[in-house]
Amino acid sequence: MRGVLLLTSIALWAPQIWAQSAPAPSASAVIHADRPGATIDRHIYGQFAEHLGRGIYEGVWVGEHSSIPNTRGFRNDVVAALRDLHVPVVRWPGGCFADEYHWRDGIGPRAKRRVTLNTNWGGVPETNEFGTHEFLDFAELIGADAYINGNLGTGSAAEMAEWLQYMTSDRATSLTAERARNGHPGPWKIAYFAVGNEAWGCGGNMTPSHYVDLFRQSATFLKAPEGARPAIIASGGHDDDTSWTEALSSQVPAREIGAISFHYYTIPGDTWKNKGPATGFGEDQWISTFAHTLKMEDFITRNSAVLDRYDPAKKISFAVDEWGTWYDPGAGLEPGFLYQQNTLRDALVAAINLNIFHHHADRVRLAAIAQMVNVLQAMILTKGRQMLLTPTYYTFRMFRAFQDATLLPTYLQTPQYSLDTVSVPAVSISAARTSGGAIIVALVNLDPNQAIALSATIPGANVQRVSGEMLSAPTMDSHNTFEDPYAVYATPFTAASVSGGELSLTLPAKSVVVLTLQ
Ligand code: AHR
Image 1 (cartoon, rainbow, N blue to C red):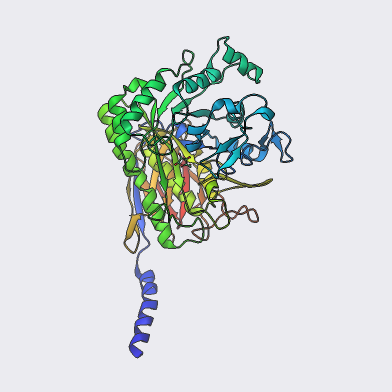
Image 2: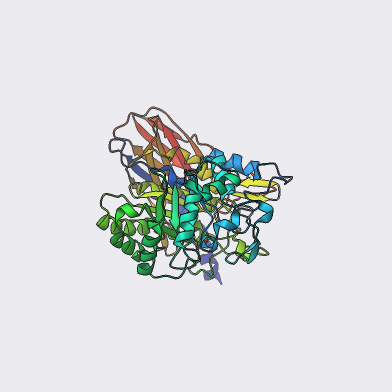
């Protein structure tokens, strides 16, 4: 008994002895203002909005006659929040939904539109109230480019070709007359058009070579007026499968593909059946989430290496047009609606991925987080007339200045953050120079227990001042609720200084910090 007591007291005291004697962890970085790199395409800050759960209906569209304040049917609170985020592009209508979507169901007088079945997401009736005109009006309202995902699965090359003509043609045809009757005489500008989605799965369970043929066939007929043809996106691979990038880039001439799409979702658990909860998780799930999300770096590197072999001029973009966290559905929620809470953990996941995209700015020139409102890693959650901004929203807002900035290479020495057998680099960094000349630096500290001191030299710049913003919160799963919508939000960061051109700061535990240096 005595022996047991002694062991217990040693175990209790040991961490305190360590805490007193161990130095605070520190990191150092070099931010190369003297070696500017590629432009960080603003389109990597894109968002995905699918007909799924309450993503479109209630999340974006409430209809003109709703008591929820709206502009032409789009809820004003959501539109204002998205405008403030400078959303550069929205991908619509799916996802899996896209490969069963027939665009003609969503045009013409709303009361006369066909009610179809959303077979992918909850088997609910789809009123088609939100169709092509509504989407393109919404994109314009929030100041975003349009990314249309065509239907290859149950559609045809002809259906996609006519849809593109309907939207973009400037000639007097029956299609453009119909567009005018439906309220839009002039053509729209479509930035991106994808031929199918996840052709390896819900888009038709195809092999890469079968898809390559269908892609080339369909893309041949995707015609638009001179200078107005969207970048054509091919449905690519996911996770660690590079065979789609290999097949597409080796068999399709670079001039025929604008981008190859890629999807990767972060799940903390080891299987899709056991993904883990969105809130109420332990530190094991916290570190596992980051270990999984950091795989994005390797996936992009491997796909880029394939692309570099066939497209060394980097004409084809790599489009990470579905990414983000995916957790188990909460108790009592419709599992097919993919609604999930969004915590400080999600904000850090977003920051890590954006840093990774920045580092690959030469190839990753389009991305879309899944999804915009009320679905998966959402920016915004709504409940009837209430709306809240999630921690992920704040990360995107803090990172806005990176849109179209010039990447500055960084070299980082970071301590590891470890728990049991899992270990990840504690700090993540990226930097860029804005068109106004400021240097912006994004930092993440994944360690939920310890602050990290960081110093950085900045060759090629003579910085004098620093200001910043920070996102952190008391617990790993801190989140905003409709009762307490500002539990997690960005605050000014004052713990950074510049002396002799060198930057020093203390990165709080579990935080995202964005600095502006002048
Ligand atoms: O974002 C939810 C779904 O995830 C999309 O519809 C599909 O493309 C992916 O599998």
